[in-house]
Image (cartoon, rainbow, N blue to C red; front, top):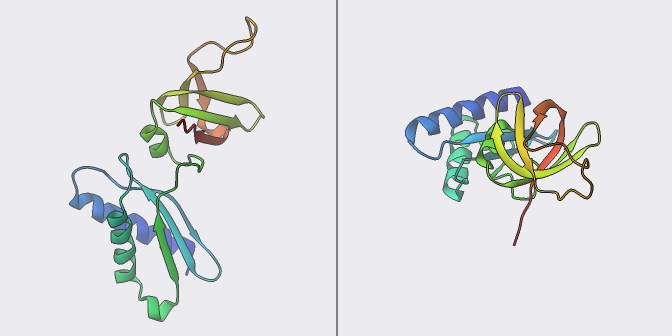
Length: 156
């Protein structure tokens, strides 16, 4: 199967499912298709995706593409807590949470996510200053194109 074809189909499925529900809007985090036709769809909602919602996406996909004829395997799940944030909706979902961020220019940030725009995120540093000029002032904006990896800090 062609990845572009799968992506378009999944976008249509998500739009259709979202039109049927008023709350907990679904969004795509990532889609991968291996040469052996294993399709992995990571999806989420702002309140967390349920097993039933994953099953709905899988069933809707199987209604479009006959699994026996095309010989593929499909897996639909949430991105998981420890995985990096990839899409804007994940950042929005995590406003108010602490993030660890690595940038393309090897800078590291740790702070509470305050806001998200189309081009950047704003965090308030939670790292203690050792010296007067150790860290930039709060809050700080980081261009999303410069983010190499951003993960939610999990505190127990």
